[in-house]
Length: 407
Image (cartoon, rainbow, N blue to C red; front, side, top):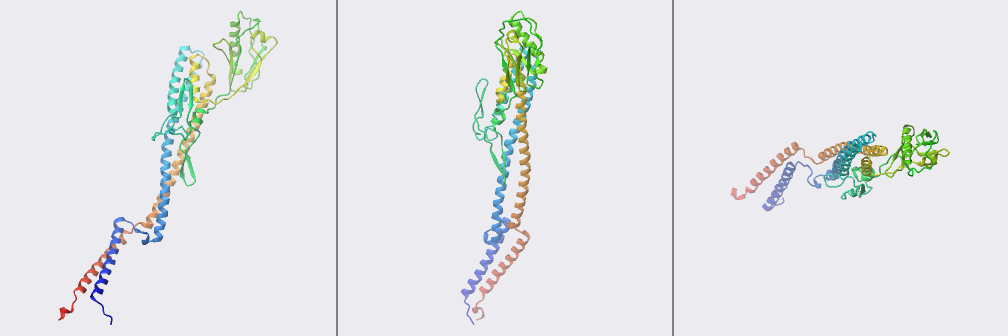
């Protein structure tokens, strides 16, 4: 029979109690943290899955953070575009109102003054900053003021053509804004043609027959006679006759005649293919006009200069047919961009819901892997405590055994 020493008995008892205490301590820590897997050694397979789930959760949460940032900037932009839409609609109303021949110069000057105020407001809107102090219409140059006004009627764009993209899902990005070049600078204008005749210097002020002077405004109606002109007493009278005659058939040709500050006759048309003036035999000498054609052209112009030129023409009490169309096109540009922004906001709202569902699913799987079953853990804790107490009590009894008690 092997001899078991007192030291051996004591050491084995202490080791057993320490192991039981370690189990109690682990279970207590699980209950206090609510987690089943505290270290990879607790459940290596679950620990690996939890690490993967944590990485996936961090990625989804970053997507959600990007969405929040994009929404903030896009909502700011949408507010600006809504204001710009209302502003340009008002400018359009004022342009039509100011183009009325019955208005006096003081009336058109008053209209121009309101347009100048609206221009200043639009310029301020174009330089809007978001909550982080970044300019929303500067492209990648978000720290640079996008628009400056170095001289009266001159506006410069200092941003770039960039459009920042934010990742909102593994395979999807969304633009968090629009650069000011496409929105406010590179804006289409109405097809326009203008012919400036020399100041009427005729050698013959006698009557001009109907059909000797025709105007084709390129609107599909073909050449239209401006009618017969009676003999004129002076060159100034002949100039006015021509202007009145051209404007008399404006509804058919689309061509407007004005007498500029230099005393020259100007013919202009908005839309169509251009202006063609045809003269019969002897009409050139009697009218001072030159036969020829001028095609319409479309040149992009920034909306600030359009509004400035519109106001200037009204201050000078001149017709603004061309600018009415230009304002409509600028308004259309803003509305199109606003529609795109609304579409992006709807899109990221939907993606945000998808990401939230995915985040909830990942959290659920993570909970299944590492969260503690409290009922089972508490029952286990009670068993372990009972076992520990039994080990301690049995050790006391065994420790107290001695042969001297029986001598």
